[in-house]
Image 1 (cartoon, one colour):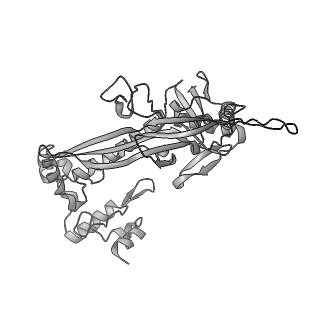
Image 2 (tube, helix red, strand yellow):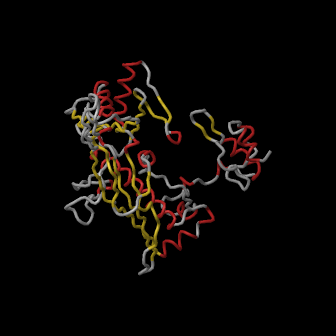
Image 3 (cartoon, one colour):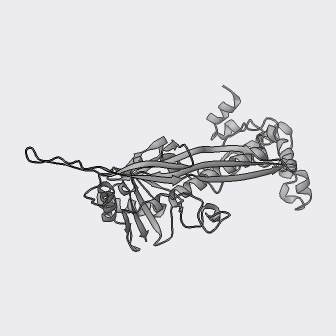
Length: 376
């Protein structure tokens, strides 16, 4: 058994830790707990005792950092060590990026045909005249949209950061590439939910969706913008069981259409506050909250067999919140080119690159989806 394993197994044993010198050359191995307030465990006195025995120094008589003159001697004698881990306080999950099917696309538009009505001859008398009744088709075309993220790292910064690679400190270029990649996914998730191809809006990051031409939007239309047949306005009311059932029913029946077919909704999407309200309703209604596991181990609440996914990209303001009931079989992310890294021209002492993505969201049958709008 190695020293690290021995300490890990006895990490709450003060006597076992006393043999190590706190701060000495044979200090504790990595990731050994020596202070845990919740467990009422503090091995620092024992560690100091072990160090005093090994060194013969009485540290109760030694100078301490707090005893040095602030801002001078303490900064001179105590070197700075920055943890290589960077804590991302902007992180968000992007469930819709993963749940919407990604489909290859040829050309700059996503085109498909729809069968919108059937010509039905039906029953006739013997030897009746037989006339054909044609089915009705329509063509749908949606333009591919183009998203970009651009990053740049100066030569001096890159040179300075690479000196610390041996200490597992990330070099500046890799950090910039990783951040721009994640930002692209956040932009994509926001557009899948809130995108508007006709009206400029404030998109993720506070930027105009019109980009360099604010008169129109450069993005594709998202879920909430694309659903029109079954858009149910609740006029600032709270979510209710009846509203949920109405949205599911209209998605399944194409708003009770006599000519259109039947949908098969299998997912609901909303914000976290509305999800909490649904949980409260379910606890009152059935005394417990059903949960289910969907793609890649994602555990969600379900209502009448439909999992409910919450996204921080959904609207959160009162009377603006929404909930979508989706048949994911009717949605496709048509991809002309998936996210790609490309270096840009070098015109000064820096490394510049871009991430690019060519795609558009389409719904082959929006009437088999529904949404609740203006939730309180």
